[in-house]
Every structure is written in structure tokens, then in C-alpha cells.
Length: 299
Image 1 (tube, rainbow, N blue to C red):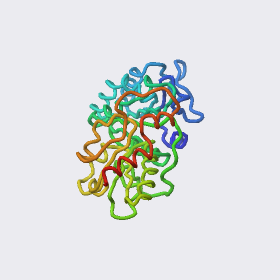
Image 2 (cartoon, rainbow, N blue to C red):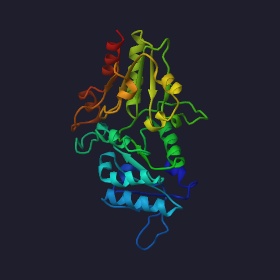
Image 3 (cartoon, helix red, strand yellow):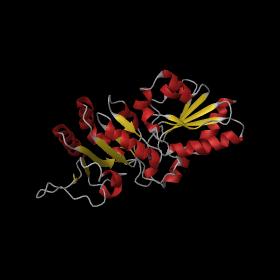
């Protein structure tokens, strides 16, 4: 996406906190900003996330640039004071925060964010995007560039399947959430997911439909944008039957969407060190577990 944007949005000024190779935030051919030459478009900030986020605020306030930079989602804790100030000031600053869940694997719980999505979503006027696949990532980038105020793009480390294979003129992520796959009949269950867990929800839907439980899957890449929609749209998307949320993070805050009768498949503690697939099985964030939890509430 950055390789496509860089030639047509000359105001983009990128960077990373010593994680360029992991964040993939450097467009091809982008020249570096150095102490001897300020003509570049990419800054190596070094291992100093707070200073990076603060500098991005200053660049945005200067005008003329759209600053973005990358680190791991876990290190949002270092950026938080500057992110809050960007929200307070309404500055267009884009934080690309990768390695967004236990899916990062063997680096273990010190690098696996659990409470971070919930804590960032709690900051007023901050848009937190967690796209499910390349198509939603393109849509969320377009929104981050168009919105006033700061954004966080929470992206995976692990590979994810493309769940959107048709092109629509509408940016479906612009409403924050939408029905990705409708139930085959009168909807009895709705699986609501973000990011890498959308694919898990789709597999769980297949299991539930096979067992005669018409099930829809809702992708919810941005809570703030979804909450801004009218009540009728939100009710239509979420449905009136059993609701179950799936996110490899703290379940805090999900009750607003699943209700008292719903459930959340997520993380209730810290992560562990193991390959991604092993961790998802260990913590019970699998299609079979999601399907079983939904089925138990439908019977």
C-alpha cells in the first residue's frame, strides 16, 4: 500500500523506531532524512518510540506533511502520551503498529499485546483500525489519510488469507463494521471479529452452517467509526440473535456489541512463547472453539 501511495501522496513522511524491516514501512526507493540531507522521505528514529511519536506531532503541527511511522503494537505504551496529545490537538498522525497479537509467536508475552487494543480504543478521537486482510488494509489506509486526527493501524505479523475477493466502489470499512458473510437463512448467530480473527470466524461459520445454525460474520475494523453510525444500521449489522466476538486480545469493551447474553473468545491473561498456530490452539481461539461456544448459546 505504501509503495502505491508514495508516488501520488508526496506529503507522506515515513519512519520507524528501528523496526523498518519488521514493520515494512519504507516505500521502495524512498530516500532517507539524514543530519546532512533533509530532502528524504523516511526517518530512522532509533529505539525511541516516545520521541518518534512526539516528533510526528510536531511535524503534523508544522503542516505540509502527513507523518506516519511504525513500531510493534506492544510499544504503543511508549507512544501513548504523544498519541493522546495528537488526539487532543486533532492532528493527522498515522501510527503503523504491527505484530498485533499472540500471532507474532516465539517472542513471547513480553512482545505480545493483550490489553493494548482496548486501551487505545479508550482514547477519544483516536481511530484504531484492525483490518482483516489486504483489501481492508487498503480501505483503512484511505480512511486514515482522509480523517482529521490520529489513527493507529494494528496489523499482523503472521500471514492471513484474503477474505474479501470482490471489488466494491464503496469503502466498506468506512462504516466501521459490516456484514462480511450473511447467514444462509434466518440469522440465529452473529460472529463479530477483527483483524486476523475474521478468518477464524468465517471458518467457524462454515461449521455452524453445516450443523443447521444460520450464522453471519461481521468484520469490525474500527469501533469508533461503527459507533458513529445510526442505531438502525448498527442493529442490522449485529443482528438480534446470539452474538459472539472473536479477538486475540483482552475482551474488555466487547460487551457493548455482544450484550449480556453474548460471549467473547479472546485473551484473559498474557500470552506465551510458541509458534502462532500452537498459541491459537493453546488459548482456544480456533474455529472449532468459536463454533462450539456459539452453538452452546443457540441450543
